[in-house]
Length: 307
Ligand code: GLN
Image (tube, rainbow, N blue to C red; front, side, top):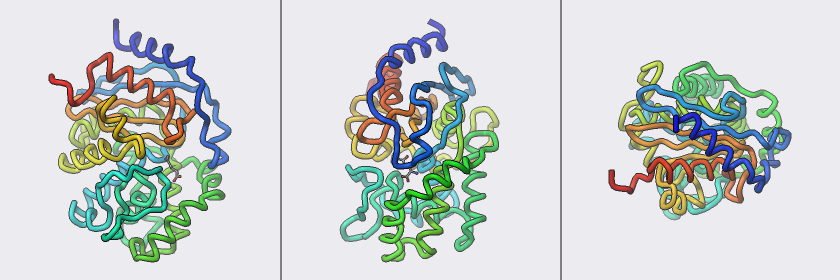
């Protein structure tokens, strides 16, 4: 079967599953059309295959975390970033108020605590506005086109970001962040409110898979060691408290977000993105996870399978 037909078949097989629920702790996310469903594959040589709602826009949410981690690594170096945020799986929900025993660092950059610290490590210290611009420019470079912020989603999440304020205050109390916690949450929330399509996400993932070079623009966005570090952390921590189940059954580095997006990055091969808004209890797209499971099984994408 030609790849686009195969992808359409995968979507058709997943479409019947209406289980899960759209995120409603962010009021704007509760309003989205829950039936949306799309999938895009982008190879490292720049071939893009798509099916379903692959041009529908939605907010990037936690899928921004690996890319902003990449920007911080590129700008500050590995040691400086590791000094602030560890790379150990937490086995906890994305919004857990937890720090590593002993070191006091957030456990990893994929949970909110780590991502909030990492956000403040991009750009020039003490200039939140410039930093937001740099984050947006960096995410745009990964996507290969200029992205923008969904202001309605940003305003909506800002009204209910109580848990992230608690996390930011916890981080401020031990000087993991040094700016005003409210300002930091606002900036992190803008990062999460960047609007993307499933196609954008597939190309962003493909840029990681391609060692940091965008497959179409051929721009080097980050160095190869950065892409390796990011995909490693996605493999161990990207799916939060289902990371172990994910890597053993699906078998590639991945990251999900509460708006219903999910990405996979297969080093040297391809970027995968799926989108469907209803979420499982871990905060990952029910159908997006199922699409990835099927792609992995059908196309033999598990990294631990012999070539
Ligand atoms: N902006 C969301 C939050 O911080 C992102 C969470 C997610 O996608 N898992 O709560």
